[in-house]
Length: 170
Image (cartoon, rainbow, N blue to C red; front, top):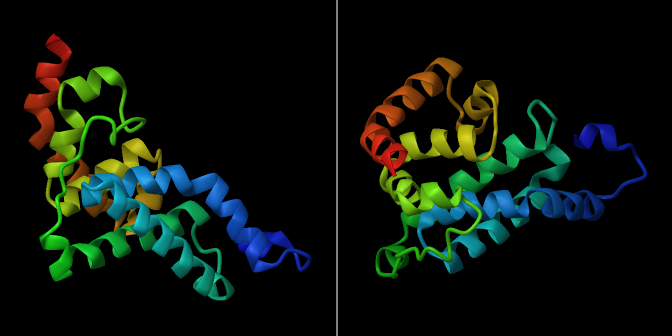
């Protein structure tokens, strides 16, 4: 947490540590949200720029990871609302998805199915399963209640049930 860093660390050092610790997790999250590697890399960079600007105001009410994920999700949503984004090629290749899921899940199309879910379901799945966040952390990252996160997780699992059952037969 920023508050625990003490007065000797400056914001550049704190940001450098956060980049080292969370960059790949943020890239995976943004890649699934945006379905384009270049756009995902831009979103991660924008996330860290926004985080750096907001560091003096970070109160530590949630973990750094939760805070950064919230910024990344909002950044991805902002990017998808732009006219430019609607005209880009957003196909994701299997090479782009490396590291997001186990190979058996990738071959079953689970990552593709997750990326095609509506935002509210996709975001909770990504944060809960791919980022190993607790319900309370997911709720904080999405600015919603833990009960809402729980309901969305259940609904997302139901939507993916067919894909998951086919994957277990492989």
